[in-house]
Image 1 (cartoon, helix red, strand yellow):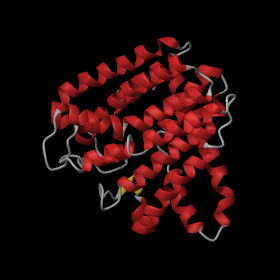
Image 2 (cartoon, rainbow, N blue to C red; image 1 turned 180 degrees about the horizontal axis):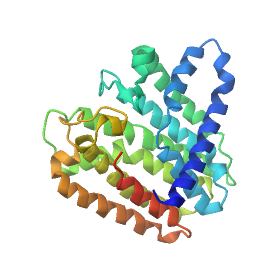
Image 3 (tube, helix red, strand yellow; image 1 turned 60 degrees about the vertical axis):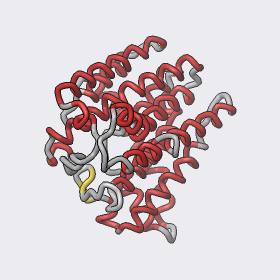
Length: 293
């Protein structure tokens, strides 16, 4: 791994994980403590922390102080975690393992897993609302970005398109419609929220969205490829589970998918021209989309 990427990833991950642990720590003695245990089980199970990393890095590019984006970054990670808990449920993907551990419903039961996901989603907006901004009017914009990308127009809408299309072959546009929402929308929110937290203007918001669109697609295509060529030990979860789904691999094949990963990665990198000091984001894009796990 690129030394700059490794060092900054570690710094961002350690910060956001400490922030999340400290935020929920006071609640662990409340009567509904089992709920917080279930939330913590998935929220602090590790992972790449890609979305909060992107939020903090885009904030750094705009104002230098990336720590100020902690509420937005945490909210995005909470929503991402809730989506994983619900994705793993028997009524959805019915997965037994996530990040090398039993999935939430395998440990706490289906009802508690659903409630843990519900709580993470709802509490994410409480956390996001604590974001301090120089322009208070931008907080409403940030909350709107988060809600739109997480909800029916974004991630949830993509999940609906995904599960409603499992019994038929999709067109290229239909696959893009699913993945730009199911995976891409929350990555878009992460990047744009970073610019908002850092006080960036419209041009930087637009550039962050373009970067997100590129790496979001490249990331998902690589994920589809790894479901075919990866192993359960490497991935920390089941592989081959998407064989019946309309993935990019099913649509294009592995060779073309590799070319598309490179194409969308480069498009993402080109969008960074409005920023300075983008070495990390460029290297991160290439690390993410060239990954083997």
